[in-house]
Image (cartoon, rainbow, N blue to C red; front, top):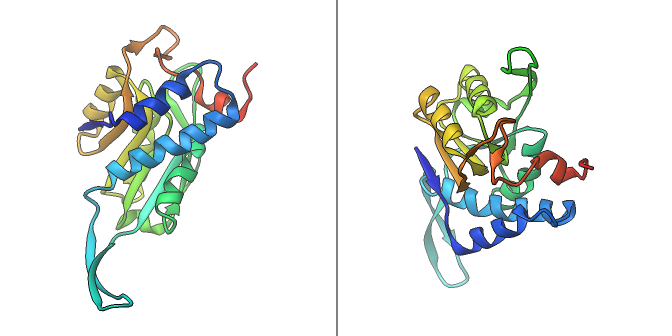
Length: 207
């Protein structure tokens, strides 16, 4: 399942973050802002519990989130979305997955992973700006499931039909929330039109 978040505010910010003239400082700010909108949608059905809160006037019946939220950025670009979720859910726990692509097999290889124990009972949110081929996303989901996770969602800023299909085939139980479903992957496996190399644009490492 995938959800396209086409709110006008999201789409406005998406137009700016795509622009080749947008510098790394503004790119980081926009990644944070867009992520907050996407996370808001992704957590709409999260488990809550009823609580009573004393107001200055009377007791109010309220609701609070009743599950651990575990955010898992895919290194390195996923870290650029982390502040957006932590601003929305400050109590969220954070895990990490580091992956690189093997030059011979073109398959993702894990070089680092660290998860809090709450992945087994909480809601896990994988974040990465780009969901292109789906290889890294599937590898991250695999590792979370191996660690005991059974409630996983993916948040990305931009994806494409190839990436969505790849994740749907391997993990049909995982929902994907995105601000854009672009046209296709080019021969270099970049999303077209996309927004370029998200990691380089986030951290100012491109030429």
